[in-house]
Image (cartoon, rainbow, N blue to C red):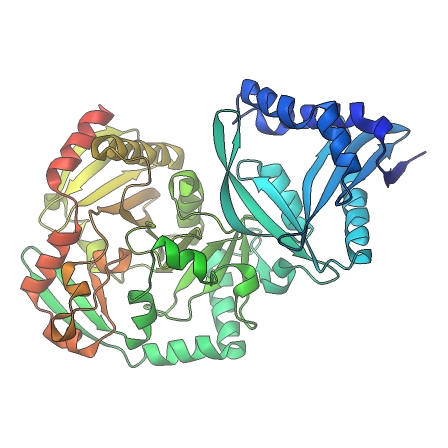
Length: 494
């Protein structure tokens, strides 16, 4: 008999309830307790509730059958207030997954939506439901919003996305290449940069502008910095990163808002590696998550460490926390650039600076001294151990600071001599007081990971000319966490 897709009917209600419950247990039980799933199910999927769904003139349903057995279903809902067509339910019995029913069901849903005149389809997926996320991305959905979703007593992150109907997917349009290890990542980087300079006028302008930047060195007490006068970085330095501005502006890292000529390298099916049109380095890239999700390194540290190894010792990987340097704190991203560009890279190799605070298998956690700001070095020869120790430090920092959100941190990742090295800067504030002053007293210095690494970006020429050692030392002290906090964190880690 094969696969049949048909409209739902009231005789399907028992099957719909069973499919929903079995799908939830299969997909959600690893991160939502069964008791919470049950309490939500018992409220929203009673037979009475399902009867109301079938009678709702703005609700539509499709059943997928295989060899006479009901295997899955899709439910559509037209939201009049938003004028959008949503897919609130798209579920299958686990034993029927991977047999082509989902593809045919989605095709039927899309054909119905096009017939109804809908320009796009919207869907919601839990962030931790990786299998479903990958499936929806493959068929063209782009996730552009992150919201909380509560089932029982458990609240999880929920991504909202849409697909343009009757068009190529955003990902197909924006993928220059796919990294599959047949070619080295650095090789793809250079090829992408070369081609994007030819095809993308704004990027070409950015690198032309970089040729005319000026630098000067300062010797501070125990450490060095370089100032870079880079007027093109004014937009990044002055970025409004409060929650209100984030909700009102278009996210410049979402695929549907990228410039027409911009393309990238698809990395691990989760990220797009993009050329940065406002470069600080001779090769400067942004690794942007495909989904619009919060900037947070905890769950992404494994990718960060993998990227370090695949790029090798000639490159560094950079991370700015959402409250201390990220110009898009609402969209997960890293940066990469050639290594050896920041003074901190040499300074942390001086053994006299390093005090071992605690050992990890194959490495250790060190406090770096006399650098004018709080600097921690974590190194090891096993990425899983390094990642676990890093998470442990962040959790300890949360406990000491009595906070739930990610602590303010900037991270440099270096893969050297078969070791993973994480250099991280502990912060207490994003910008110094001088940033907020008026007139001549204002100093446009907005420290992110590059600045904390010893390369201070000054987009205003007056600041470039007048910054001296005392001013730099004062800025570092002002934005860095106190040393006593670090000791308390180590104590919590045991």
